[in-house]
Length: 575
Image (cartoon, rainbow, N blue to C red; front, side, top):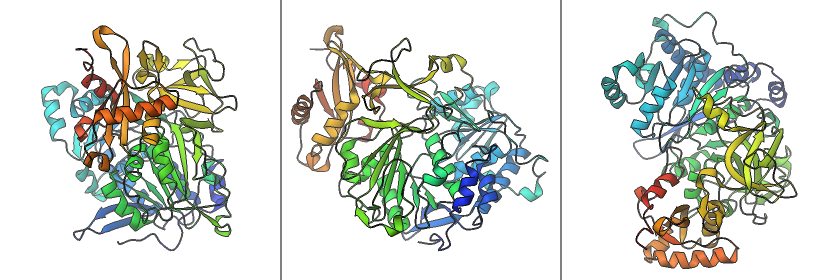
């Protein structure tokens, strides 16, 4: 491995971080410049990219704050030379890792609006999305298929389709340079990015992130997020997603050594873990499923004290294995807070898992639940709202709060929420109710103010006996049938002859169960015994997914339940 993290720490001093918390103009559009202004270690590498050399060894390359600014300015000069101006949306369709973040920095420095697109998005869906956004240009790793699509519809073709390699090779010195007013000065409500939903059917939603809104709520992380001289973050987030951007913003302002991963598969992640030795790992659940399956990554996770999850909630069956790894200081109390006296405290075996329920629309994880090896199991608890949340409630369809213990619509009132959806005011208004933003989740709250996440509203199973929530069922399968089930997805499909929906599970088997040729009937029997013991609805059927195609994942690693519902829509039709 080359370019090991520098023995000189790039972390910003505490006084600098405290100053950042009170900067009135700081936001998602200019955080790099603010980091450079306050961090005396601005020339020390902190952001690491990775690749594998010809011998199969992991190679890390470090970039300082000043390095990133130089790359940003060169990329910005290319965009400016190609006519990009403030307020214009530009699509960035580039593979994961540090590269799409550099384009984000360049475009926001010009006042333009980067539309970050996961390059794993289905191509026909991507074209519809770009047309909906109305991008003036596209920069991509490969423009071949886009160019072919726009030949069929030339009136919709953006002003430019360019290869990312062209931007990387640009000679800024030979160009017209940058605008006189550079970097651009953002107003608080300026849109600084567009983040898309999965778009499994139809055109994806385009969530707007605003300059100040996307920074609101993150200020306490400047003093609470672990950033001692020995701390290192591995970011496994998709960096074209709000979650990846959020962690990169935080790491940049802190000067926290961070490896920005370009791949989330365990076969790639584990060697980089062993080389980088992170103390923290941030991801969507997708990688945590892989890391918690089979032999645990003991060497790579030897120094991990914290796992950070956002987006969908993680499952206890995976969490309980991961927190056995690593070591942590005594006295961990709540999310985003580690005692600054860690070095003087005795280390405890195991780590903490911080599950932060959030979304692009919420602007950040707004709920936090901490699990350690000593924690009691509390299925689907996402904890209490973080301090940025002014109000959180469970509502009925009319916007009235329901009593504690009653299931309803999860709603939040917070300055971190999105301004809405790009070019779709009607869709934006559909998520607003009684002064709250509806998160799209079904939840309940207990008498102590803890929230429990039960389902996405679109995934609730409408059975003859009433609504059945898929996530608590999945929780039981993954925790109580762990010897059989590696991962699973519970969905509702129509019963026979137009009857109400019935719950079924599509499961991936553990390798030992696969080798033993375990049948779907065996899994169904074990699952229903565990579900009955937990007081939950039982399953009508189990289907085993033996290939990746039979367990479809979206661009961000979420199981595509809509595709599974379509695939098994006629399962009971002949009964």
